[in-house]
Amino acid sequence: MQGFKWCLNEKREIGLASLTSKILCKHHNNSLSELDTAAGHAFNNFEYISRLITEANETNGRFKVKETHINALLLERWLLKTLINICYEQNQLIGSGSEPGIPDENLVRICFGKSKFTDGAGMYIAANVGDQMEFWAQVTIETLIEDSENRVAGGMFKFAGLLIFLWLMPDKLPDNFNWIKERRPEWLNVQPSRPFKRMKFKIPSGHSHTLHFHW
Image 1 (cartoon, rainbow, N blue to C red):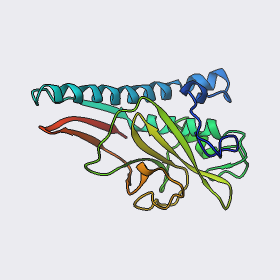
Image 2: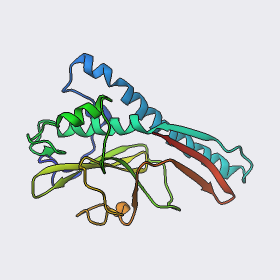
Image 3: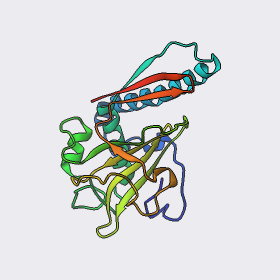
Image 4: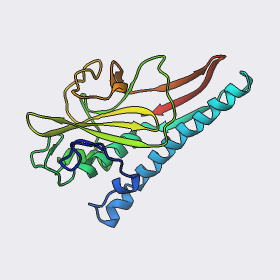
């Protein structure tokens, strides 16, 4: 994680268990448990596809194409819940909120499935056609902070190797992420896409497997 006063000068790794809600009562925690389940399912899907691709390469193209599925809305809400939890009671404004460390009511409603992102806000997959992706058995998060207002405008996630951008502001995103200062090299020239429908994986012998995102 990066972007807060306690990790401004170095990158720190924090386990997923440390990102779960500790600011909510048991009842509200339980009501968001489906988000953790959905995120775990999505993560396992990438691991599964990585294994299938390895097996397909080893069989010299003799394999059955398989299709897997991700609930994009639940994954989006999990990203939001995670971002809110790491921002809570920090010294930055969160999204359009007016009190440091406290999310605005609409973000909370989205987190609990009572509302949806509108305008340009929400989850974006950051990728280009033809990109190579390696399964990465970790999730990392970096906050994107607007310097002028000390405001968390979004989060940059690396989720099992997939680059995901969660944008909290209503403004439309540019066509790439080159405008972000001090971004990591993997974000250079990649395009944001929302809603993202599917990923088709290929090996040298042709189409391998497909991962569908359901909105």
